[in-house]
Length: 388
Figure 1 (cartoon, rainbow, N blue to C red):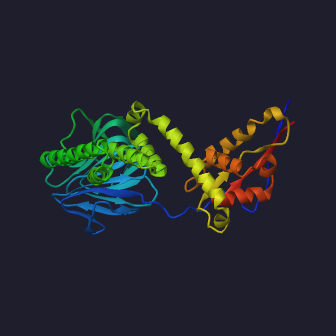
Figure 2 (spheres, rainbow, N blue to C red):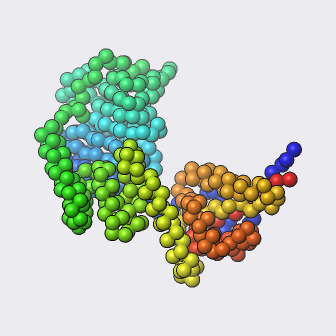
């Protein structure tokens, strides 16, 4: 029977899983404002980024928030929501109605005296004064589900419509979708805005095709401001950067497009381009880091960053492949730690190759510290193993 003996080498940069994160990213971005909209009691401005706060719309108002995980929240007229806590997938509907579109199963909506968990496309509306329906909370679920807990049980509703009177009452399933104020169409302004965006996007694509990159970029940036999330913007901005030799920007934009429109990216055979760009970009970053080693030694590391190096095999050579396998397992686990930035395995390996650090160098604490400084990693993990 074989046993695996795994030991780690202590370094000046010890592994600490309870790592302090750097400056927190914005939780949400206000991407659309129409009519009277206030954020924390002041007029709201499209493009504002926020962590917490209260958003309120007037009788002619509407607003849209995009969260860091891609979730969209659309607020109807005469409505109010609050983001109670940064970094939490939770919103409080205090008045009026909202539409929530999310792929995450962990989104919660607080409803004064109760809460529900939602995923997919969910519409909620308080029906109170001047409401044509009986008072209460109304909702519709499409392409997902809501979990409503009440005293004595809970209901899981998929592709259903419901009315919910309170936390002590089982939700009532409705045969027909309720006519909610949050559904009231604004067809003319919406159609006009959509037509204008389409015309600008077409002009940008035509400018790109004719080789006029400045005009194409200007048009695409206008589309991005008017219609955040339009995937073709990222695609053509990436192609412009690629044509101008800016591989870093090209990679960033094309990766964004691949996330926003996976089917379109596959149809355009984008994965092959991304693989080549990623490899070239990593090679360039590594060569630059090694050439600027003296400058980087004194530079501060990236907060919350960690690098995992391949483990050193101290035993049977036939188990050499486990060196990268063990590192990959640790990387996979560390990637799940909030606030922790795990450096790409390929970048770490390329840097070690460029520094000409073999197994002996990996096992040397000085070599590990040197590689960590070049990678600007706050923490470095190395180790060795032996199969006996």
